Image (cartoon, rainbow, N blue to C red):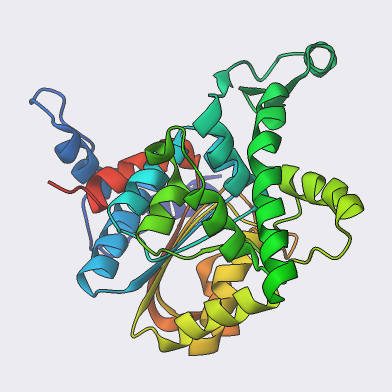
Length: 330
């Protein structure tokens, strides 16, 4: 037994070499702490707090190096209050390219007519359906919002079709988004895409039919069967921009199609120079959604020399903090 205790003692009191690096400390609330100093303290906090601090530093460097900055976000981000953050970035020309989904386009315009409402995650889907209220997480979207959007969207489709009939022009999703933005009248300065149109920031939506706009296009095709939307012009436009960029930085909130679309485009230039991912997806199933930046390095989507980080967490909490620290105009 004594011999076993000596072995146990040796294992527990194993000698170690001194670790080098940043000492772990959190914010000192005995002092007056500003938001800036609180965010600075994340560096030495550990876990995802330190990853968040790293994301801020990478984005700051993107800007300092005058990178072409790609911002990707899924539709639920626009459903939330992050829409106002994206509008700020577009309004002040702080990003150069946006990639999003159909919902990420249409919900921005819908909110120009009527707001979405904070609800509850636990709300009964059955009861909401009876009331004609759609739920995205804990955000309620009454179906009347889509009815109002249709009154705006269909005349824009008709205008696009008239131009197609007259000139033979086939519209692509980025041009259609510009058309919608240019026709906004109500609360247009609240819109992400109004500012993108005004500041010539291209918006790419390769899955434009995967949402309310697709539903309306479906019905419209019964009226004008020759109406066309062509996504191939947009992929050429996106890849040409990427190839010609001197340096690129990518900021991707969420995952799925928007994540791969941006990363795949950067493969054409042997990878992005900087990358920040924010999502909660895991890589155990081999999905691109959960893949860490290092997997993208293996494909040539992010350079092996790039500065990159993945922050696990809720973008509605994390991204406003990042923008405050990395994009503050003051």
